[in-house]
Image 1 (cartoon, helix red, strand yellow):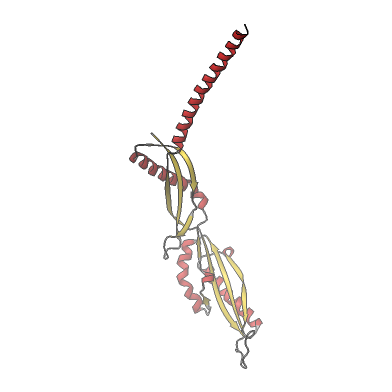
Image 2 (spheres, rainbow, N blue to C red):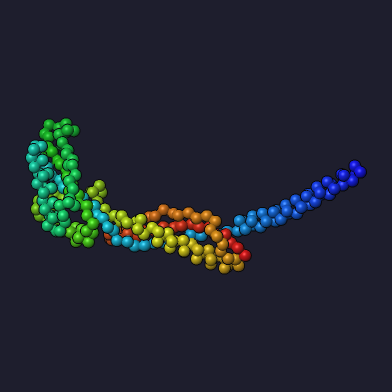
Length: 238
């Protein structure tokens, strides 16, 4: 009787063990299929480029004056600044677009150790900054700066005070450019899949590159080239 009592538990345990092995085999098979699928993917890049018109210009007009005394230097700086402002207003810009920058003053005697110091002791440099969205008007006005020279304004040119043409509406075109770059990446993936006898599956990973904004060329600073590259990995399926 005791022996019969042990038979049924043994059969039950054996059945559970067989069922466990069967289900475990299925899971191993499925895991192998998933692993095999995960091992097959293609990495492609998509490019989107656009030419855009800038919408903001910073144009610093710098000038230099000399004087033997500080009060005379101050008057000369004020006079030339007024001439520059009048020049810009005359050509269609608004007073609200003009901004004054504190002048820089140099004392020539400060580091002079000779017996005969320079007769003109002080040099001052100032800047009138034009900040405007009238891009085309700026381009029309720039060649006319010689009018200031005829008005006895010593307009100075330096790398520090170069005009800046700026595109500020990048966020307006970002979504469309990212979508375009993604479409280009998928086209490349589809072509690769067709060549290898596969088809494109879901996205495995995706990364968006940095947006770059550059001058179209050195002669057209008011037109920029905006560029972005996305890198996407797609699963490949049979």
